[in-house]
Length: 221
Image 1: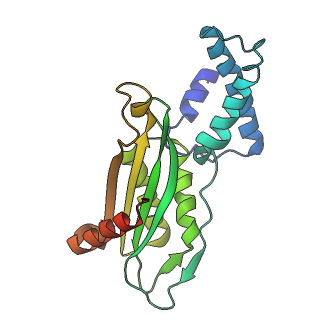
Image 2 (image 1 turned 180 degrees about the horizontal axis):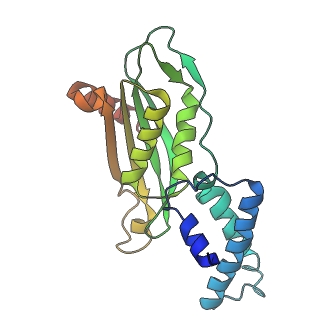
Image 3 (image 1 turned 60 degrees about the horizontal axis):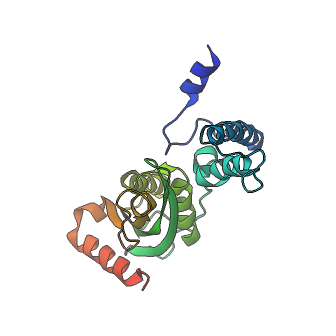
């Protein structure tokens, strides 16, 4: 198998984790290779990164940013989830948010930023996870090349698989800089909002309305 075929076979969609994840040494090798390619891109764009004091180290900085920050959720394992017994057999809706969200658009590689809200209807004989873990889950799936419609579903599926709740809701409200900084150059007040519902949250209009009311109450003023 040629090197190019091997790379093609190991490639994954931009919002999927790579198979087996990458350890620190593998990520370092990836950053070194990426820095070389970014330097080649600068050459094509006629940016003298070898002599320009402003951009001399930019290819390496950008490569590190992509591997360790922007796409970090593709290369490392999901966050460990701390769970607790539902000792009080609590069965009412729990809503947490706003959870700050920072991601990157898969279409133009521009930032997406905003807030996520998560509503959980726990099972009385199930588990409840630590509150901060919802923030870590959102961050994990956000640090990939995303579109918002798929991001809410990835967050939902992970929480369902991990905690098996009776119901779940995930809502994201975000600004897309591929719209504000290029193309139509829309106002930063222009946002995209979408939600996904699972289990009893999907079947009950009353629970949906309660979740959306709590989201509105938690929305930053």
